[in-house]
Length: 183
Image 1 (cartoon, rainbow, N blue to C red):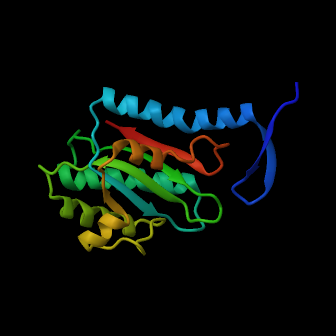
Image 2 (image 1 turned 30 degrees about the horizontal axis):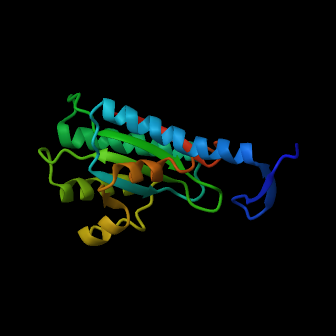
């Protein structure tokens, strides 16, 4: 029996052949990780209220941007809850870069509105991120409407937000790095 092949385009525009089985495996991988993450979030009763995107310096690695983001969260946690508080900032975060784009963070975060207003969280996060060596604030508007359309988005569809964050997770790992989770 002859195997059926499909022409697919890689991320760099080259064409290659893949079998129907390989195509099915790729579809499975694209849904498996987000499905597992959603199940984990549900089991831990994690309900984020913001999807944030933070850009890193073009010449940094994903690992450097991930470390910078973890540092940013530690500083944010200390400023909001105090130096000795064990109250975590609940989040799940990834870093992406494909060589053509700056490395950047996508994070699903629950900002505690009992501690600060959403606007105060936004301004404080931006101030901390831009003070780091590797974070850039070029696209981080403090205008609430613009921020909500660009880097500090409300989450209305948790499934879509998780899928967006983990869209690169099924590849060979060269353009995706899991950063951290805390629920």
